[in-house]
Length: 122
Image (cartoon, rainbow, N blue to C red; front, side, top):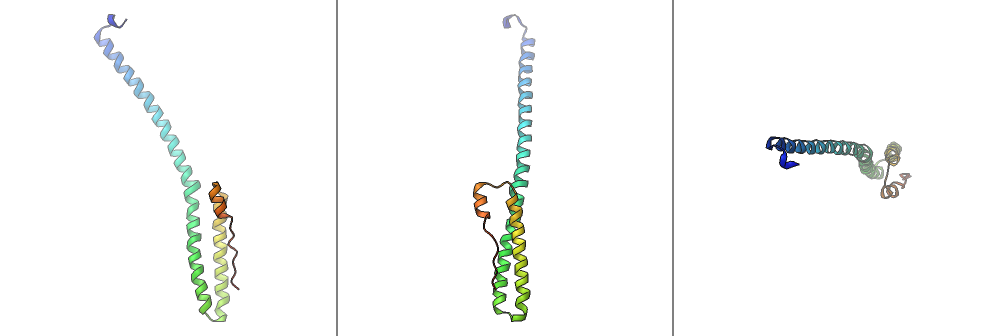
């Protein structure tokens, strides 16, 4: 069958087959890139964004540590204000942790976030 075809027709057929393979590969690549983009957006929204709240909670613990030192050295009349500020910071930490707990967590993350931030130093 191919022996009876002219060279020009064989060349055109070969190029059409290569073009068809190229179109299939382009469609598969586009589909894969679309899936990759969706997964990246999900990873950013569900995993990375909540970590900013954890970072804020981590930073807040350092502020609380500083407040503890201030509490030790300040006079009695200013201690109430420091105690109230510290309790507000603990409330902020708990709020950030609750937002993180609401996200789709893995088993390892769940065990780490079940600790409570209810500490009073009175």
